[in-house]
Every structure is written in structure tokens, then in C-alpha cells.
Image (cartoon, rainbow, N blue to C red; front, side, top):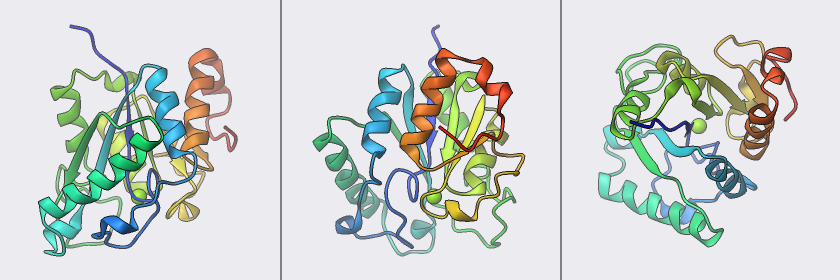
Length: 201
Ligand SMILES: [Mg+2]
């Protein structure tokens, strides 16, 4: 059985603009360059898997149907730019603590559950996969799942990321820069160990 590499993407603040407790499809805005990044990563052979914590459902602020409407709008905007994500996983659990490093539920990032389920359901090779996000819980979810590399982006809440955080292999400006970095490392893998905390794409 052939396993595929994947790029696991956070949604809010990484693929689309950060909106606190996003429930309204009309507030969905792709981050500039994000669709281009998805196009490039798919062309490079990666499955694109969105993994998103959606506590709005657990908090009773949004139904699963409402979430589907948000994702339909997101997909429409991606399609208008000629691309799409391959799969979307969400975790509806509302946290009871605010520690982004604590795994309170296996599916809620930083838990690895969504990534592991995607890997099993879609024959993904975690060791050749990446996790990209704007929060420490994102890169930690990647670490906890055992992906090959983790990338923080400075969009969304990313300004709060600490470049020295050991959960993060790289910190770059945005998703497009992350896609460029992955492409660069594909052609020149030596760059991976040479600059493990590179600020450049
Ligand atoms: Mg985010």
C-alpha cells in the first residue's frame, strides 16, 4: 500500500483570517497567498488535511450544519482560485482549561487524534508530513502525532509564537512562505538540519 505525505493545516489564522469564534460564513476570508500555497503543496504531492479545533460547537454557538456552511464558503473561495483542501477534520470539544500545551482530549489540538485518524483513513505517511499553524497547540499536535516537521506562521495569533519553542522546527511569515520552505527542503534536504530555526522561507 502506497502511503502519501500530507500537510496538516490549521484553519483560523493559518488558511483563513482569524475571527474569534467564527460562525458567520460571510466573515470567511482567505489569508493572502494561502490558496497559492495549497496549490503548490498539492502539486508537490502532498495531501492537504485541515485539522481545526471548533469549540464553538461544544460551546453551543454553532451547529455542525453551520460549520459546514463556513467550510462551503471557504471551499468556494479556494475553488475560485483553482484549488481545494483534500480533507477537513474538526474537533467540537470545548476546553475546560486554557493551557494550549495540555492535551485535554485526544482529538483537540495539541492532541494528535485528528492527525492520527486522517493518517489511518487516508494512508498518510506521518514521518514525511508537516503540520503548519499559528498557535503552539498546532505545532505541538504535529509533534505529538509524530509528523516529520512543524512550521509556525506569524499570521493570526502567530505573533505570539516563540521562535525558540522546541515544538516548532521553523517559524515563517505565512502559509505561502511555509509552502516555499517545504519545496526548498524537498529539493535540498540538507537545509533542514542546517538551519532548524530559520526565519526565512
Ligand atoms: Mg489558528
